[in-house]
Length: 455
Image: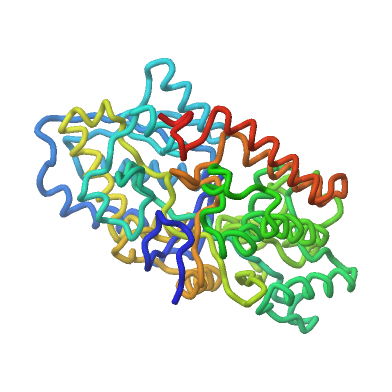
């Protein structure tokens, strides 16, 4: 029987996209019909009767650093406004590069938007700044992340499922096969390294969050599979970072990074596609958001996708609705018309045609109960199939809430410490000790199991 690692996720979820590096463009496949006609058709019935009692305006903010995401959202909002003449949603400029800080600033100067893309959900829930989803909107999704049983965000995409994108021609020419166990994966990397014509993996380590992708793979296989409550147990003092399974995860991460290209720690994430499509690296481990970047950089480049198994051949994948998504401010929710308009927008956005077009453009695995109308590329279908067959699905450790929520800044400190291990400037025991010291300091001001710092 399959297990679910995150208590916040329901069985049968589908899942994907956007992890901790901002909205990213991806193309799962080209739509067979123009987006204009599908959006307009989907809106006709919704516009038949106004859901508001008087003309209603809402301000809307989202991270607009990615051109494809920005284009999609501008079109969807324009089409919604056209279909609902009594509602006007106005998109205000966002800041894709530092969206979290941007939203904090908007709040501090009294300009918190009516509706928004919410990322730091736990913080805004604790501050009472966002309103719960209505039951009608919550019912649209296969899974949501709740706070004490209450859902505050409509997940427009699931967790950004990670896996290996590999050079199909290189694999075929050299008789390389998709690994069925972790040991086979390590052997595959060593085989490519021994050939010497390209690095087995490309890693963008100068962006510290990029290390989180491979960290999550090792952490899920070595820790979460056997102990999904590890972080909660660390808060309670029942476990610590000298735990053998945790140290194994750090060791595995260092081994994987030994197969990265020379200079991986100074290579930005923005350059990894160049390494991959120019036959400098045979594989890269990242999310589905990379599909469009590969397709745009080299349309004829042949690549495949596979999930990296654990030592027993089981597959642990990021998946399910995250705590992020569309949210309505608590202040706006006091106005019944603004609440009704927000609900109408969510129902429109997640309608089969509109949401299907969005998922195609963004390579977002749907979070909705209703399967949206969308085409899928070979690579994207591989992701969907792997999620369906996965032995475990989970959220990244920095996406968890409640008693598994990380202390502020602990994520990046962990990644930097793991980089030191991979570079040989620190051993695993020293890393564990340093992580525990930092954890103990964090617990002096933040511990969700006791309510410290979260009440």
